[in-house]
Image (cartoon, rainbow, N blue to C red):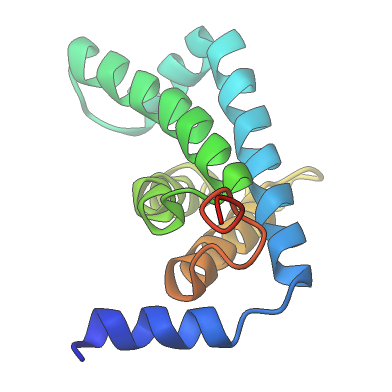
Length: 142
């Protein structure tokens, strides 16, 4: 058995059901953030352009990737389908949010989202390891 199969087997045998509720809540939160980013695309585009030295096409591509990856990843996490893939497409976004967006001079403002970004990143890493769990669309097909 290779490493990936061992990690998947360990995740399937050590997965409590309350963790599925956390996975579903995380997916709902990511869907909410994806819809919020779609409604505020101009603000997100200006934030990306101001923080990073990209061209306008690259900034537009990145902002669309962020919004649709949150929507797709959130739906996949809610359903419990392709959970590890959903986590993999979210992790670079959260790393960018932690290091480029939230670590700014006004870090200690009253409503800083650094802690929220770190918690979501850690939950994504957790679900990357443990997988989808018992409450998923793949388990209900039996």
